[in-house]
Structure formats: C-alpha cells, structure tokens
Length: 384
Image (tube, rainbow, N blue to C red; front, side):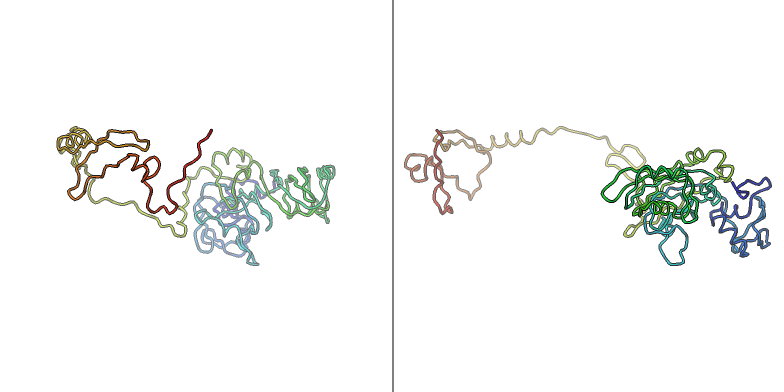
C-alpha cells in the first residue's frame, strides 16, 4: 500500500474524511481542498496534509460535512453505452444518472469502459473504493470476452508472464479459450491490475478484435443472476467477512454506525400512493354490538327442503297429470307432468303414432320440420 493508505493514530486525513462522508472520492476531495472549497474549524485550508478528528468542524462549500454513515457496498450491472463518471464533458450518459434516486451518493470502485458491461462495485465510502481498486490489494477481476480472429491456447498461456504493448507493461494474465464459433471465439480473461483498456489492448496485440466484454466478477463478488441495470446491496455481515481485518483497517471502514434507511423510491408513472381507507364507523355484525357484546342469540332453524314442499303442494292441488306417450319406435311410456296449466294455454295435443300418422309424418313417427326444404332426413344404410 502507499503511504496515503496507512492509518493515522492521531485521526485521519481530511480528504479521507470527506470521502467517507460520500461526497467525493479521495482524489476529488484533494482537488476541492486545493481549490479552497474546504474549511476546518472556520479556516480555509489549501493542503490535504492535515489530520482531523471527530471534534473538528468541517465545511464543504459552506455546508457542514454530512454525518458519517455506515460503510455500504452495492453490486451494479453496468450496461453498455454508459460512462463511469458523475459528469461527462462530452455530455454522454452516465451510470450515476441512471441509478435509482432513492440510493445514497455512491462512488465506483474503478471504472468500466463505455462499451464494457458487467459487474461494477459501488460504495458510499470513498476510502474503501480507493483501497479496493489499488493493484496492491490483489483482487482478481474476471471477464468474459467475445473476440473476432483466431488464437491458440498456447499463445494465451504466454500471457502469464505479462506482456508489453506500446511501451506499457501489463502484469500476469490468466486467459482461457472457451469455445470457437466460426470466426468468433469466447475467452475467459482474469487480471489483477485493471489498467485502462487493458483487455482490449492485450488481445489486440494478439491479433484479436474485442466485440463484447463482460466483467463477471470482482474479487469475491460475482455478477451471478443480476439483471442489466439492476442494483443489489451486499449485507454488512457478508461485506465485513469478505474484506477481512486487513482491508477493514486500511480503508477505515466503519460498520458501527446505525443504518440510515434510504427513502422509498417514488411511484412510477401512472402509480399513486394510496392511503388505506379509514372507517369512521366501527364495524358491527348483525348479532354483535361494536363493544363486542352479543346483541341477540343467533338462531338457526331447519325449514325443510323446498323441493319436498313443492312436490307435496303439486300433489294436493292436482297439478300432477298422468299421460301416456309413445316414443319414436312406437313404445308406450307412462309419464307424469308437474305444474299447473295456464288458463289460456290449451293442453298439448296427443300425438297419434298409428300407421296412418307414421306415413304422414315420416318413418318412425318423427315430425318433419316445416322449414326443412330438402324434406325428411334420408335414411342411412345399415351396416352388415
């Protein structure tokens, strides 16, 4: 680690205190100090070489330094086409403009290129971000690479000793050829330094053109099933265990502060927050008072089956009529009709199924519909 990463017994550097408050990274805080934007106990300072304690009053741009918050870490799936910065001079879209509004002010651990996607660590502790992105920390960054061209595993094994590209020395690289699809191939690339455009420059020296670059892990943290543009917070217990005592001491991560809950995200378009309905009158049942006392005993009586009552009424009133009908094959069937006959309704005529009526109505005594233009239904030949 460099000398700026070492903890100070008398306090901590002013830039680290600003970074820990989540206002900026430590480098940005040092630039603010040099510009005269920071004051300690009413005195504007110009040098970051100053230690502060909890009893010092720090002002940034005339506003007091926010209270120290518990160290938090987030996993973010960065999509392609976004810059890893808070403000881009060329006006390109940034990841911080796309993050949910209910999150605190976050700082990225390292950067991903404009056309690179995948896992990006975000934290509210600038000192922790600085420690995690240092090459001396030794956290492995693993990528999935799709490239155009051809290469052998023997060429990739030669990267374990490092390589120099255009005067820039890159450290040991672990590369594996996964599969080949025509003129394209997929690689697994693992590095520890994370220099600017390191993967693209190294593969370009081998004659490959990177067409897609996805970071799938950063140290012990994996991309997993995280969806594109999705943010997931790492639990405090898991974060403390993965950092270990050494990195916690070097970064000065503070897990003792109470958790400040983030405000709930605002409702989306077309969604309104509905308050629960308030009842002015207490709910009362038919047999109980609002105070819970029984108003009257609940009585249940069996009134009998309505079907049995109707059958008995029809028999007494003479509404049951016996008739004899003949089916289509000439068989006589005795039936009973229930219900009273309407005064203006004549009884249904009895169908004569004699041979004369059968010849008139058709074979089998069936009536022929008047609207059937083609006459009676033709008979089907019997199967032998």
